Length: 307
Image (cartoon, rainbow, N blue to C red; front, side, top):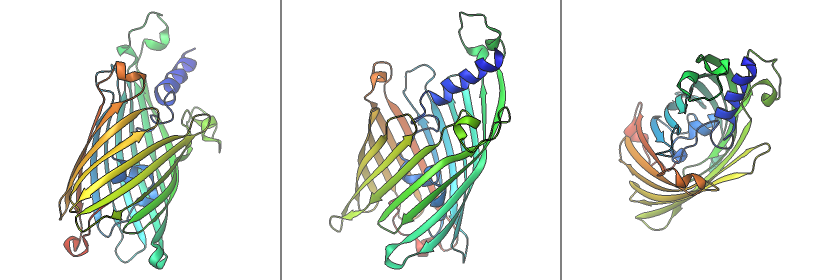
């Protein structure tokens, strides 16, 4: 009974919202490409880092809270990029800590940009403080906290990009392994994790010497669930000031704001207005992002970042 209860808890906590919440959702993902696709690593000529904190569904008891730190950059003289990402995610009494390393190899196609292939590998640690729950059934399953469960995981991606556009396809969790289960190619039979397919794309249009428009999209698919889409449109003034809006199907409308300094610093904020039934219990979601660029000869190679 205990093993069944524990599995049900993990399915509820990390699988019930499998479309967007098994891995946390972000509104400012376009500036945190490493989170979506390992092939993003090293796609700039300098090293870049991003810190993101998201407080989702404010006012809803047990709502998700996520913190992500990511860094990536190119290897000198190589067509390769490296990256690392650390994430802490809490939903109710459950917690997830993830550490991933990324590798990407790039092929140049002249005026058609670069095509990168990437892989990521790492571990996720899951735990739950069951004793913090209010229960009416005195089942022994809920008498003790759930000790850490560690799952190795592996993902892949492809990323085609230039200075003005990008397109990517990724499977962040292609394989994963639960020591309590037999290893299988079908990740859904080996763990409670599910294989998500992410398709991204964006383009920067020059309107005049002051303004640019950048539409972008993120499509998310997992088996036995509806296709989800994030549709975004941002306006960029003097390559420094951003204002935009995003629509996430069946979930929220977001307002996006960002400032990008000409040198090495950027900061962004987004506010999600919930459109689902959760709007009756939540005052929306807040997300803040801070980024720093660094590396050798940064000023010489620095160009405005659009993604």
